Image 1 (spheres, one colour):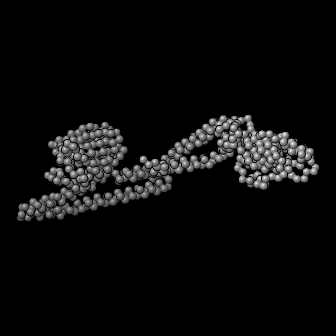
Image 2: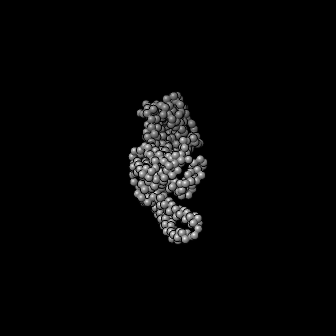
Image 3: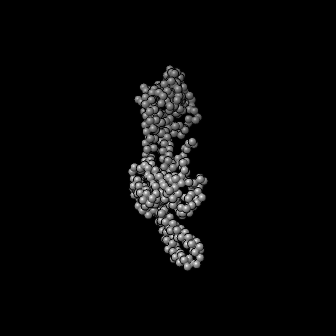
Length: 480
């Protein structure tokens, strides 16, 4: 099975767009979280380093000459605090602090160090910051990842600072101090594991879950009018006389609902016009058919009279059957709960009174929503078809909960050619060679029955039985 990354439904697509969009926004804004926590981890080491550097500058400022300064630099330096006197700053560090391509964290730390030096020395100090990095407890420069694997991070600082002229009156050139320092602290208040859980669980997992739930609710609410429109379109195919779709919701949905109702009205008027046309044709044909029948009775040849009389009877039967078919597939009644068991028992009793053998097995259990007159017409046609070709009928009812299956079986010859099991539902199609030729009929009974089944959202199919005969399987959903 191929995995679909892009959902096929509008609901799924909108949920994915909202969830992915908001999650991407969270990823972008998480840089603020990183900067804040990195500043927090570097603030204390930076202040300690700045105070130590201020003390060193005061001592170097009081040195009597350059030789004394160099000697003092050697005394002040150690493994974690290395000082070196230089004549001029590095060329790439001559630009102002904000214009040297440093990160937000580095600029913030640089401003903090400069502020502490100004406060301690009482004057402005030219500070040229090279680099600021976090180190873990093993002195590895892991950067921001230090926040997740140690609770004892330290700051790694590299800068250059301009020294005052000092007490040597002969000094004419500026002197700069280059500093490499690693300053620790007492440790973070938050343990690394709890920090990771706080960041990944509370900020990402919980927020992402909340965003998905919000998207599900919001999108379901937004697409609900479209769902109603789709259900109405589906119901229209089964019952064109259903109630109009409520015009509500956003402007686009209201516009679509109005267009849908207008289409339904036009289809209803078109069907009504077709029915009136067929009724008028039937009425107008009766007069010439009556005149033909009178003229046939005046013919001297009895054989010709009989032949023409049969032709006229066939014409009248076809006209009546066509009108019955048109009226039979039209749903003009309201939807009600139908007691299928009582309806089948009533039809079976009527058939028994007419001398036919009909039995009913099983029960539907509870009522089935549908159109009573049309469903009765459908079941009557199936029973008539079974009795006509098999002389008896057996009805088996199975309630599957969400649907009801009604199987009408006969003991006739069946349909030998399986390819014709679908063609018999076509109007006026009859299989005289495989069924009883003396039974007559117009070939519209199964057409009407399948149309009624479709109007209920169900299906109707035929199948040959292994022991002989034919099964008409009618399946009706309860939510159809």
